Length: 363
Image (tube, rainbow, N blue to C red):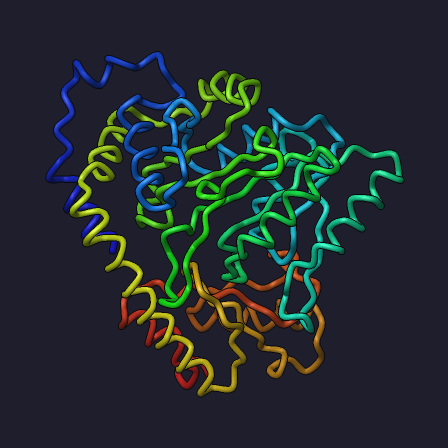
């Protein structure tokens, strides 16, 4: 879908130098972009009250957003919990500069990698009893690499646990508009009413995945906490996106007919077709595919292809695929507790997908 997005941007990007510099000093995001994002998210997530642009801070991608949140919320050594397997940058984003201790909450293979609330509560108690401060819980919703979408009930239960222990919860919704299962409705935290602890609830979204434009480097943080927003606006001086790019993104979201009626549903349909084809190819080759409903990747079990199920053999198989021209991500890099799992991106053109999953050509 990147071709459609770029064509749309080329048509509409008519920013003049005067308007480019109009809000140059406001590094937390051009007003027109924050308004466009607020309207877009309000249209799709349907909160009881419209999302306010004043509660949004724009930065140059979600990595920058997470880094800024780590500085805002954490002191060195504070504990950050996230369910695993998980996108590996969660660990580095909170540790590299803020110095937080990121702790995995392992989701078990035998339980379909389900997130269990009692395990979260137990892990929090363990670190509190050890005299450590548990500061943040990070949840990817939809999840990367599991492709799970959590129910409103489970999200609320998790938030209640965090509220009980005064823990900030960061919800990364970067795949919010990449739901490829037609029977699944995405329930954004932004659309939920009466949050258990709204002042400690922060939601992220960006353009790189749902609109296939990672080069734009635009991520957004939503928070209703005045102290957090003040800190993020200060940090945005070091994480700002170019005004030209912000204007282009605002133009894209403001075209409701193109964006809502054409692009979003078309993208979902193309993802659904690619997901179906990839599953069929892999399952015919004896690969077990974990059912996903969202995202641009598969979570697959290749333990049957390992002589012995351990991390060494998992990495050896990864290198074999790489030498065959196929790059997939081993579970070890995603902090998976069970060797033999891999993440495969399927959101590519059909001929590339067919080439990549053709096992005979790699054997």
